[in-house]
Amino acid sequence: MIAVLKQGVTEKQRDSLISWFETLGLSVHISEGEFHTVLGLIGDTSKVDTELIEGLDIVETVTRISDPFKSANRKFHPDDTVVEVGGVKIGGGNFAMIAGPCSVESHDQIIEIAKSVHESGAAMLRGGAFKPRTSPYDFQGLHADGIELLLEAKKITGMPIVTEIMNANHLPLFEHVDVIQVGARNMQNFELLKELGRTDKVILLKRGLANTLKELLMSAEYIMAGGNEKVILCERGIRTFETYTRNTLDLSAVPMLHELTHLPVVIDPSHATGVSRLVKPMAMAAAACGADGLIIEVHNNPAKALCDGPQSLLPEQFADVARSVMTIREAIGK
Ligand code: PEP
Ligand code: MN
Image (cartoon, rainbow, N blue to C red; front, side, top):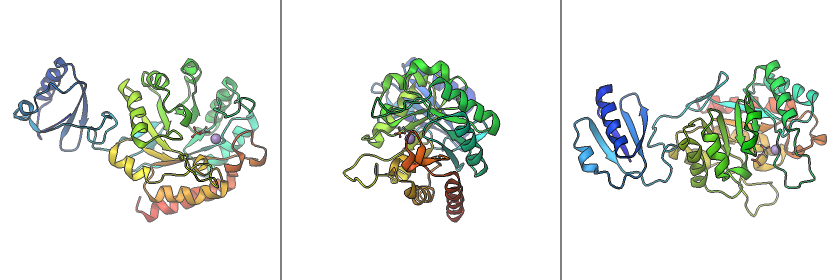
């Protein structure tokens, strides 16, 4: 349920209304807009008398929200959320490119790639240290050493780092990680999401292979319900009957999610297609339809990559993609 307050309501009036809602067992999400304050009421609102609240002279309107996601809901928070991390902003008109290898493989590999993507305009560095591989015999990542190498690359380039968590027990290793990625396979690992909701880290939440946008938003809700509202959503392709591409990029997720939620939405054209030559057109299309950012796999030697080589761009190809994406951003007036 949301209650929109009238213009000119004092802080004291607002706070006493909030306290009253809290005595009814509800938690209250406050969104201060330019003209109005929106109070989002979360909990069992079935016994709340809407007419009574609407009758209060400081309340403009009261609306019941039937969507199961509340904190993530655009109706609760009409303005775009801008997630800020290490000086980088994403959302609300701020566009950020995240680039780097699928997995951190060695000191020289990550430092070389980090320097080159930084020069080409990447705002953040990605690199997997814990890799969710289909086969237990494939490279599983460098684990703690991989995170150390990312931190070294961060020190050299100044770029915030993004890396995936697979187990909440590993959280202490992520202390200096800027953005924690929840991969597609863990989108509905609810215990992990709850744990991340208790941290103050920015979370990059990827859509599951076969999950609806509503399910993605409900997973964001798990994180936000714990008090962590710094969530970035990522569409990375879904599984369909198509086989020429690794997944099918659901670009309509961008405008649809922008309608439904205030959270930033980024596109991962690398996992969405699985084919390096398709990354550029899909990255440009993502920028054209209003994505708040991109996450792109880049490797200095894709043929020898330990993970996801076929979809990885060379650093110079990433530079070309970054330029074309900026041209699109300008063309759409951003
Ligand atoms: C990745 O980012 O390398 C990754 C494993 O992504 P996803 O979870 O989208 O498959
Ligand atoms: Mn990958």
